[in-house]
Length: 118
Image 1: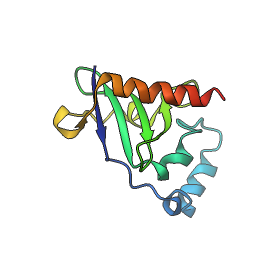
Image 2: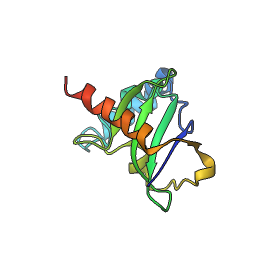
Image 3: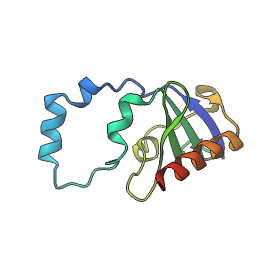
Image 4: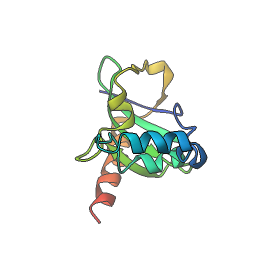
């Protein structure tokens, strides 16, 4: 596995998440299960993504981090497929990411898991 940090897809805002078009689409798709029902509302707070990649560069796990680097959530989990793992169209190269050790990623992952059990 490979690990890294990216700032891609960190431009969500409260304003664009509550845009009437997005809300209308949400109403139209009400009966369709959402991919990330618990995490979507936190996307505007994500300033960095810590990502675990397979050997080919496909995202396997993610941790959304706030501006201070604190973990907000991790995915996939029982209810959320994950922003990056679910996209399945973004294959990363190591050069696109800031290096992150496996130990550092796992520490973030464990912190999120411990926080979600309270």
